[in-house]
Image (cartoon, rainbow over all chains, first blue to last red; front, side, top):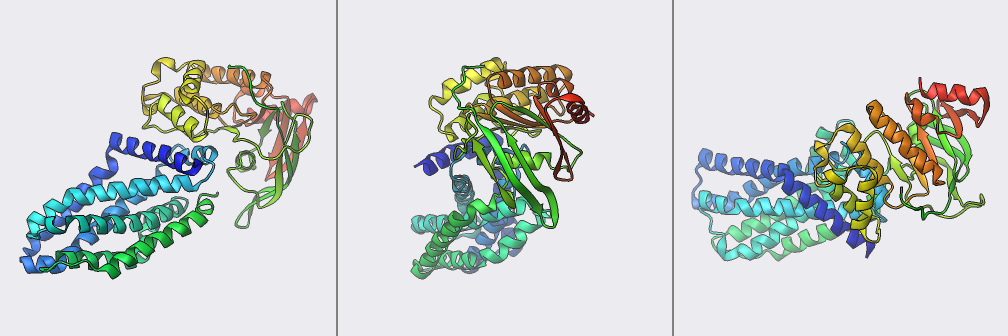
Length: 224
Length: 234
């Protein structure tokens, strides 16, 4: 219970500081918006092309947005050494990870949902009929990205070449989840949309597996 | 300061080594700090003062050796509730107000009536009127006051101060010395490393000098005590 109550308190802090500064949400939303608009004007895809390539484009944009969002996750705890204060205060260090990964998932999901209508209009892909399934895929994909990214952010924050290290570690680790997310999203964008359950199952298993690893090893990631 | 509710606690370091790769930050450090002592650690940069304090705070794990906590009669007393740790970095959030910071950390520590505790501490550190201001709008001295309040939230028996007055103006340093005096007089065990503060170091009841991760002098009285303190103030 202490774990969940600590995580809830820390999640409140993450949301409060972000909505006060709006650093991450603004940066990532603008970034994804630029990618979507730029590709739309450059390639001027037909509806059929958008259905084929749109999912890949979306997840690529989400990936870069996520790496922008995840970089400062632990880095900004170092400015005033607040991470030490958190470690002294929580009974289970996993609470720190839990709060950060839930916050990252929410921020990423919010960015994705804000930009989905823009994508739908610019690429002429109807998203409303499958919206609930898209939200599920976005959630599972974003959760996987956040779990792995939060763990790697903790590791890279202590390293010397921290700005370089996170993307270097993140991209190979996230390849399976990006492939699965893209395939499931592409199936939902199809002219006859369908839910690719195999991909959804893979995303869920990836999330559970990485969450378990983080729970087991999280304490060591924060050690000096 | 509010009436104390902690049990007197000492610390025993036994054969502590701390290595970062092949580099020794601490080498076979054995010390026993009795409950209620006010110890100042002196030494050059890189002598191991900060590492020793972070090990005492359980923020760093020794590579070998043990740290144990002693009750008032000097017997091993199990685990220690989090020590109050104040460092040069304030360890509070700039994007939160002074009150929000204290509420956050008191909720994390499971303190009963966090709002009342935060209010009491804000009054004690003289920030009652700025409680709703963001910490990033504070001066260095005011930030350090919030840091002290955060460190005292759970009424710790042991207070660890790692060069806490660096960057404070004389008025701030004087206020800080007064606060440390209150903490010492209330019976808390205080371990501090200092860098150039005379007023705070005069409160010490014991001085320990570290060099290259080892204890090279440890004294409570006499000329050596003064020379170690003088080194701390150099």
